[in-house]
Length: 230
Image (cartoon, rainbow, N blue to C red; front, side):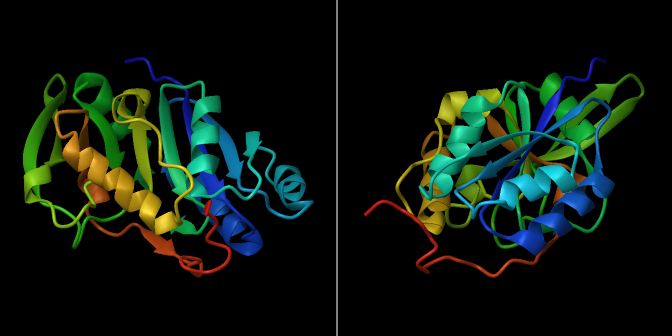
């Protein structure tokens, strides 16, 4: 099986220590059989922020910058610049504590094009699901869960938590709403996925059921730094 290039998209704004912990842990714990391309999506951090990261972490391949326009604009800008079919999204304060197998996620989406996104950081309190079986390779199998919108609590079929997706996911559901606070951006997109339930499915592998990340950042939701357009 050919393993395509995969973009690791780190979403950030002014978290000097947290993003360093996150990048170091991702380098240790992300596992992929193909090539990873690292992209930093920054929403207008102070001067020197990106320069110091690029100097310290030479594996960073590209950056995009938005001028305090909020999560939706920042991530949409990065996604428009992404040239690979697969992108793994990780906010700057989600630190992996164990192995994250992106190879299995890509394998699943290659063999089952009805799947468009794989979640990696816990589903407790979020969703209902049904068990499916993926015949991944001869004499082997890859079990996975598919989220069933009708069983889901609230609007968290989709989550901003770490996830891997194929470009077909956003081609169907569209990009993120712009001009909304962070939490509203996530909820709006989750509602959209629930409403357009015939689109690409969201799946979970065994290493996406448990909480595999430590969320180390202080939330900016509802603060003056939770940027959105009034």
